[in-house]
Amino acid sequence: MTGERRKFTREGEERRREALIAAALDLIAEGGPGAATVRAIAERAGVTPGLIRHYFNTKEDLTREAYRAMMQAMQADNAAVLTGLPTDAAVRLAAFVAAALRPPVMTPRRMGLWAGFIHQVQRDADMAAVHAETYLGYRNLLEGLIAALGPNDPSRLRLLAIACNGVIDGLWLEGCALPHHFPADDLPRIGLTAVGAILGQDLLAHYQSPLAQNAEPEEPNP
Image 1: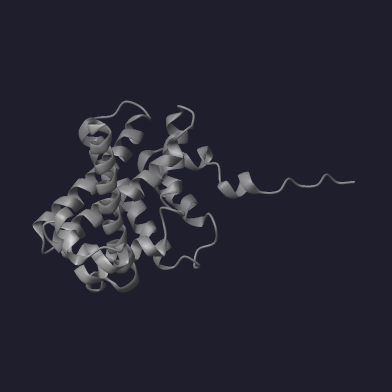
Image 2: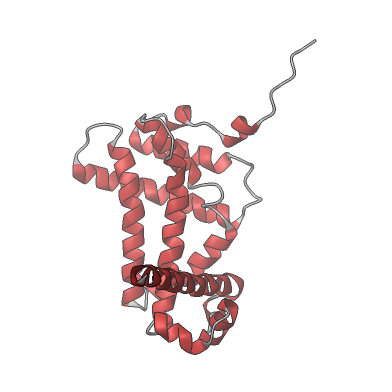
């Protein structure tokens, strides 16, 4: 019974901690970092302001954890596309790059959150450490997918991953900021063309568009 009670307590505390992080993210998405006051976060999460101190020493600690949670969730959404894919390295890389440039990875809400957090990276060393951790986590995942294409010098792989990540980041920002400006599937195809050019691979040839997969079959001619 004691073990069950402790497990239940840990799970309950983890849910409350996640609720506080979710509340902070919602407030920042709606009104920027200034909207995420301790009182507002507590009210949104349905707890007392004093309870926040039980989980986070300071509001800044909560803000950093909210940023980490957002970035990790975005990486998880991007990597989820790899589940169930064949082992073909080009197919997996193409799917990963394309997924980074469409919802749920690429959304105006996520860009708004990112913009709300990113200015703090320049003035908060701990926030900069979270940024470095999440950036490197994503870049290392991308580097592993590139490495699977074939033998390559490790130092060159690093540079290739940085270059490809830069292409993805730039297109991601534009797509989030102007979601209705780009026709459906344009940004994934542009990203695949650009990343493929960097790597000397025809990634577009290995891309299966969700639009094509979801298209209604054509009626045969009578």
